[in-house]
Length: 215
Image 1 (spheres, rainbow, N blue to C red):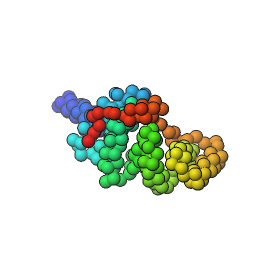
Image 2: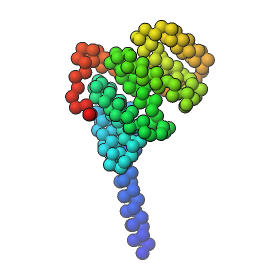
Image 3: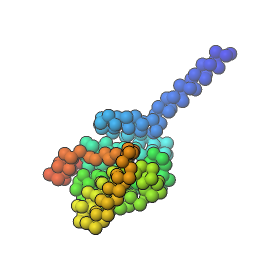
Image 4: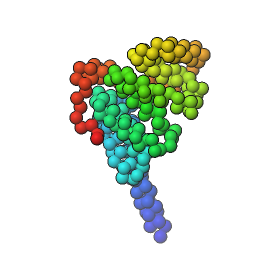
């Protein structure tokens, strides 16, 4: 009788492992592992699987997270239009969701702004950063990660300089200098992950004529 019980427990355990292995969280995590190894094609495959599993299970959080991953991976393959489509869809889903520790609306807005920077669409980039930066006050980022906050402001500095906002650019520059001076012994938790420079060159010459972007 005890052997039967052990076999049943083992079967339940294995079934649980199999189920967990196919969960949106696990699939997305595997996509992240590929992404941080710069294996963007493999990352897209895992994020796509995570998105499919999220939709099937009704998990809106990981639906938005999977789209965010698809956007970043496609962006690093210089598929900027496709990346933009995924980010817009992700933002649309995230509007109805609460922020969680690993996924916040500001992340999506900054990423979309960063994408527009790569496309040299500075006014659109400015719109996204102008929306996202005030949200960081809710997370107390300036106090928690002052140098990471400075990194974001440096990205914003590029936008301000390219949109001709010299007064705000000067104020922003002084803010960056102050953060770096007053926190010189610290390390940034947030580090920018811009799209490759050649993506911008390709985009300017061909305007990123990509087919198959999500509708």
